[in-house]
Length: 167
Ligand code: ZN
Image 1 (cartoon, rainbow, N blue to C red):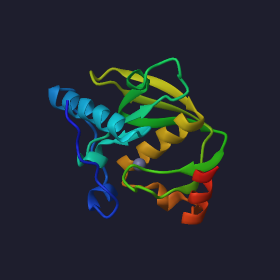
Image 2 (image 1 turned 90 degrees about the vertical axis):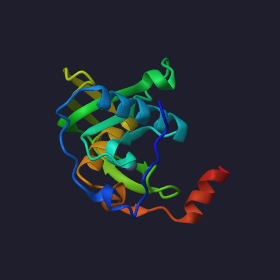
Image 3 (image 1 turned 30 degrees about the horizontal axis):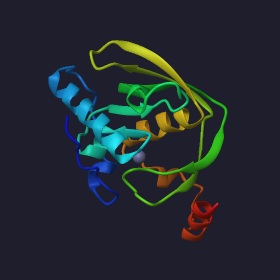
Image 4 (image 1 turned 180 degrees about the horizontal axis):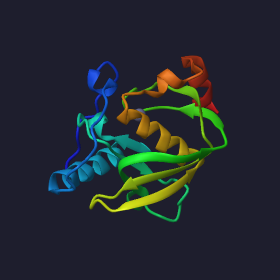
């Protein structure tokens, strides 16, 4: 496994559409293993392949509600993911490893169900609520070239972020 460089805002790859994964081969497994190491190293909760420069429909998301699991075990790999059900609404703070230091207020569904394939091509469905639902939506957005800053009602000011870190 190796850590890969996280592409940052301003890199045009983040605005591109990713292609479906068709080969569930060693190359994909290496990509996913590297994404896992990169995510854990960056202390994030989700990462999409385009963020490491690969325009393929693969994301990883941490199910942070499963506090009994280690961070490594919380990671869910989603290949060719699709949101098949969404309900409720949550509005809260969101950030992105590709836009360091920037946070905005974004509304997302409170609960989503996602259909995806695992690294071997088997189809499965997974549900998420709260931060996990937010993360599914955020990472899947990356596959279509969308960043959270487009969806944000507003971006938090430096003062607001400072106040938060003081409390
Ligand atoms: Zn992101």
